[in-house]
Structure formats: structure tokens, C-alpha cells
Length: 263
Image (tube, rainbow, N blue to C red):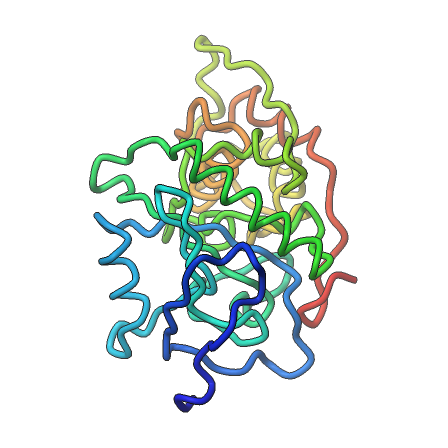
């Protein structure tokens, strides 16, 4: 990409500032945004995040950054491919960067204290996300966490991010999680059962990368935890307990993704 490809005007009037990143490229031919991926920056300040996301040697970028005070900063034009998702997968799609718009939410993350997301910041997330999904026709099922598309490798935006509130603002899919049962230890690691097969099928149907056959192994526990981070945040231990399975079973399933578009 050359300097002429750097963003010169925002894609939405909600943007308060442009901070162009050179870490961009065209989307794969035939692709348009069909997913919205939400991240946290995992860095101590928004200034540090903007620096990392705009340095050629860091090889990362995103379309938008939302500061703790609600300020919305655009770094990459929506028609270009930003480098925010890394190695990832959803519903058969492996080029998540070509198929998505990425928002980085300023929060230092789990390694640096992981504070709550301020209300003013969440309102900005809702406003920007709502604007994006309306303009691009992104279905609620395809508003996703980084942890959804990269289980184990990523855990952001994490259990403190209020997906339920966001869904009430008209953004994303949600089902009320089943109550926790503190006396339910969940299935034992290595277990093979009808519940394990059912959970594998439901997770795969929703979009997670998981084989339909197998035991309740370490990889499955990682994916279950990613599901919990989004849909059962009260306890994110990766256990396949009754609360998790019940919540998963009530989650309506999306249409499939094909060639970067909702089919």
C-alpha cells in the first residue's frame, strides 16, 4: 500500500479523529464486510495502542479504536483489509480479516488489571457497531469476540464486556445464560457421551472450529471457555456443566458464511 491508500476521510460521522495505519491491503476479491470483530487493545493507554497499530514493524492494525472516554478513532478505511484477527476461523471462513471490520476497545486487558469498560465507552461501542452493522447488513450472529474466532490464542474482550447490554442496543446475538449450579462439577476431562457430541455439534453449528466427533478433550475445553466468555461470563472455566450446555442449546443458529458473505 502507498501513502495515497491511507485513510483521508471517515466512513461514519461518529469518528472524532483519523489516525491512519499503513498496515493495510485490499480485501480478498469478492469479499465485503460480513462480520464485526470486537477486541480489547491489551495495552496500558490508547496512545500506546495507536502507536502499535500504526507501526509497520508491528504488522497489526484495525479499522477503529474506541478510547475509554468514548472517542472514536478510525485507522483503516472499511473497504480495506486491516490486520486485526490473525490466525482465526468462523463458520468455515479462515480469512477473517477479509470478511470483517475490526474494532479495538481501549482496555489494558487481563495482564494489566482488566478494569471494567466505562459506560461512556460502551455507548460509543454500541453506536459505532450499530452504524456498521446497518450499513453493511451484518447479521447479529456475526458480531463476534476475538476470542470466538481465535479460541485459546485470544481471550478478548473478555468476561467483563457486556454482550447482553450490547444486544439490547440492537447489536449482536444473545440468549440469557442458564443459572449456575455451584454443585455441578461438569463433565470430566476425557469424557465421551451424548452430551459431549451434542455440544460439539452445537458449537460447530454456531461457527466455532471444532470436530463433530471426539472426547471432552483440552481443545474442546478451550472452545467451551471461549463460548462462556461471550455467552456465560459468570464462570469461564471451560467446564461443560449443565448451565453451559443449556445456554448453548437455546442459542439460535446462524446462517452459514460462504466466500466471505452471509449465505
